[in-house]
Image (tube, rainbow, N blue to C red):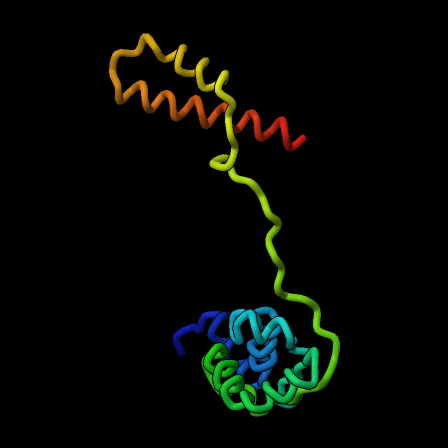
Length: 158
């Protein structure tokens, strides 16, 4: 009697024999495009579909299409390196709409940017006057200043 096989190994063998694993692997390109080609290229190109081991890419401008045509073999190598095996045989470019993948993070102020006025700082120093240990006083002052900055930030954000 044969040793029982795990369901995972049976599924892996079945998927490989039916070549179902190829489309599953290749479609990971669509999600990882920015990681594969970098932000500059990803900002002007977007994978649209994969058929018969050909990756179809929409490109935002004719100039970018020409540039990517020159980089076709490099892109093909990067895509297949990402997949871990040569599953894509060709890349075809088409002028099309590319959604913006590069987003500028909104300018936010950090707590470090918050400025406390002199009356608050004087009040904090007054509270800490009776602490003799200089190191403890400094640490407590830092904690109280951060707390005051957080409170001020929250009030301003509302």
